[in-house]
Each structure stands twice: as structure tokens, then as C-alpha cells.
Amino acid sequence: MRRPLLKLSAAAAVLGTCTLAIWTAAGAVHRFAHVVDLTHTLSEDTPYIPIPGITFPFKKTTIATISRDGVAANRWEIHEHLGTQIDAPSHFFDQGLSLEQLPVASLVVPLVIIDVSTRASSNADTSVTVADIEAWERRHGRLPAQAAVFMMSGWDVRIGDANAFVNHDASGALHFPGFSVEAAIFLAQSRNVAGLGVDTLSLDPGRDSTYATHKAWLATGKWGVELVANLSTVPPSGATVFVGATKVNGATGGPVRLIAVW
Picture (cartoon, helix red, strand yellow):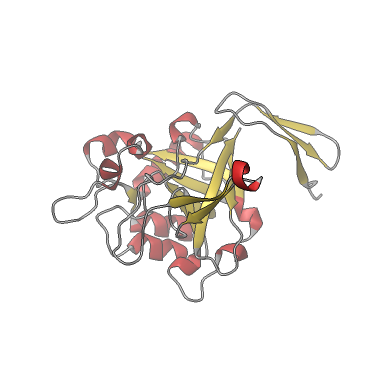
């Protein structure tokens, strides 16, 4: 029997306190007690990976005001991989799916959170490992089909300090947690996972300038999101994540509004 299509009727979102009501085609009402914004506010101070000649900070310029023009509007200067954002497979592969080609069903999925924050507090170079995934499954059961697996390292508390967030050393090497290549391959080959997410700047640990995890994961045709916020307020299992990806022809990625409900 086919499930009825879901249609959002009305919603109000306040971190962790509101109720979201969703009406189905059959008239039943499903209510979520918790709605959490997993998105950092994009601003001129948002941290990013500095790549000379390629990346640059967000910039917002006023182009119309209500007092002068009767309407307010801004111009944005932004690249696709800035702020809380999504990577499409085409970010690393010429023939990979671009952002608008990702199946929309893969963007509303069960959310799994793997907590490595204790390790990350003393070792910025730590990674999510296969052992971490197996430990999560021993406690919560096998990963749900088509789940999004997000790393929680606690890195989001640094968002107000770009230098601490990027965390580069004297040689210019970056130091922050990510997914190990082995974990990405395991999730791609042994589990039915829709996407990966991290609360840092990259799916890869910062010290890996070869983007090995990106390549291993995006080669499977799946997505990844970066710079996720507020994961400490979401349970490790049982939530659903809505990945509000922009729909731009040929995009390799773009800003997202991430919302978790349960």
C-alpha cells in the first residue's frame, strides 16, 4: 500500500520548543514535538576554507532601500561552498550528479548522529571511524535505511571565532575532525545511507588536503553537508532531517537550511 503524500500545512519553528503539524492526503495529522534549526546564520564573519584565488568570504551589499526605492533588497557575493552547505557529487566528479539532480526523496531522511566530541576536545585531528559506527549500532540498532549520518564533534561552539574554527597551524595545515575514508567506504558499501554531515568545514579531517573522504563518498552519487549547527540538541536516533537544498542548474553545491524534527 502506498503511503499518502505529505503536505506541509503550517509550521512555526523555535529551537526545540514548537510543534510542527503535517497533514497527510488522508486527513491524518502528524505532530512533531521538536523542531531544531541545524543551520548557522551566514554572515561576513562565517568561517571558510581559504583557497587563494578560489574561495572568499560572504559579502552583502544594499542595492535598494525602502526609504529611497520603496523596497529593500541586497546583493550577495557568495560561492557555492560557504556556510551551512551541501556538496553534490559534481563537486569532485565531472559526470557526477549536480545539485538539482539529487533525488528529492534523499533530502528528507532519518537522522543519525555519531558523537565524537569527547575525543575532539583533546584531539582536533580525530575522525569518525568504522568502530564508531559499529558502536552506535550496538546501542541503537542497525542504521535506518536511507539515513543521513552526521558527525557531532562539538566544533560548532567555535563559530564566533574564525581562526579557532579553521584551526590552522604555523605551516598552514588545518586541524578539525571529519569522517575517515574507511568510514565513508563502509557507509557507502555496507549500509544504505543517503548522505553524510559534519559540524566542521569539511567531510574530510582538516589535515587531509587531498579530500580523500570527499572523493570516496561523492563517487557513490550521494550528498554531504558541512558546517552543521546544534547537533547537541538532537537525539542520536529517532529524528528526521529536512535538507533544504537550493535548486540551481548545474550547481556543485549551495547553501542549505537544515531542519531536524522528531
